[in-house]
Figure 1: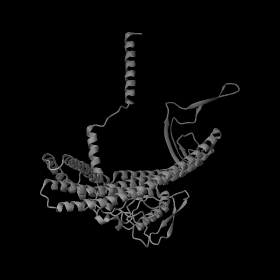
Figure 2 (figure 1 turned 90 degrees about the vertical axis):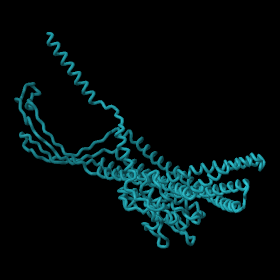
Figure 3 (figure 1 turned 90 degrees about the horizontal axis):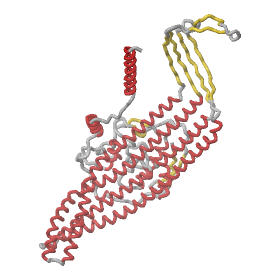
Figure 4 (figure 1 turned 180 degrees about the vertical axis):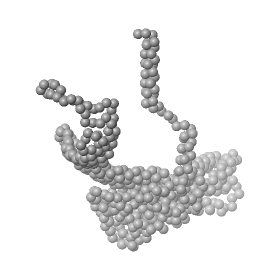
Length: 580
């Protein structure tokens, strides 16, 4: 080979290698971190979107208004609302999967020479026909085919039923998030209310205690009291200071915590409508634990979610049975081909196919056992969750009773400390000993008042846990306490709301900041009772979905019955609920 030919060969190989390298490099994707500019743009967008389209808070925040704003503007609630909306879109897609498949195909084909062929005799091996063609070198063809597989339709039908149940599961998960959110709002609100009421007093008491420390040390150095008594007094004073400072820290962050729960920007000032002392009452539980258990087993979202999972497992079993059967596929549709050699360039074709796999006969027993075990597993999970819910209900009840006793004792102690401080402050004391005793009484009285507020906040947290265990989405007229009429009314409305199939619809206008939710009429109102303070179930602002009217449901609904006290005569009212 000549030198020039070798060089051409080398250049050709180099060109091929370079082209291969470029091709490999073009098919390789490397990690690309976000730039500072991209993250800055996203952060600015998120900051604007988090607090966009919010109603201004123009008046003092009540507990009912805090519930309303939390449901409308809390981002976790919005996430669950959008998950419910996505689940509903999945249901629409599953419904479309049941329709016959319509396929359109079109193509243009050309070749460099004719598609010709000849025939050969089988007996003599000689060519029997001269080469011939029946196809144009360039042609266009297409078809529109309607295809329907009976087996796929059955599977798609059960897929749609499962998607419908998953939309209900998404609603139950959203209910669970909202119930936890309102529980957190209830506790944070009362902590913020105590901060609103006592923050100035705490700062004043801390300053007074800090100012009294030098006097206490002077009492020790000047021998006005025994050294042991003086040191014990200083120790008590420092201990009270430490407690007050820790409480002050909690109070300082309580409003920030509440603001984050109701969707207000951190650091934005707002005022709490502190209820009167007479509003801080904790009545006894309005119904027996047995009736609470019945209600929790009916309405708790954790249990209801697993009930829907049970229906999904049943549908999965039926899908497994269908897949064991042979499939029948029906097709029909018009065809067109520009091939000039065809006698008929337009025609309609139809076909029926039967297909199946013989190995399904081998796997059928295993598939059936697995399907049955899946149903048993779902039942066992639901029973385990039911046990956990009942335990939570009993714990919440005991915590509420304990919190009631703690609040009662704290209130009595606060009242005694307040009277003691007034008696000491009314004394005419000119010596250091009298001033120290006054400061100590002032700090003790304030700390007792703080303990009373904190114990009431813990009692409210126990009420929230009780509502969450019962599975209530709507609250009595006085949302801060438990009442016979209010709680029974909320349970009846909840049972009736779950007696109908549910759907997702765009949210309407929410309750204003200052107007209590009780002013808005409930969907269901017993004739003998006032309207319940219905918290909008899932209003998340904008076009976020909420619990609404009717969703098609293909499953039969089991019926459950609960006995509820009517709150007036001690009689029992039978409330029948068709669980969706």
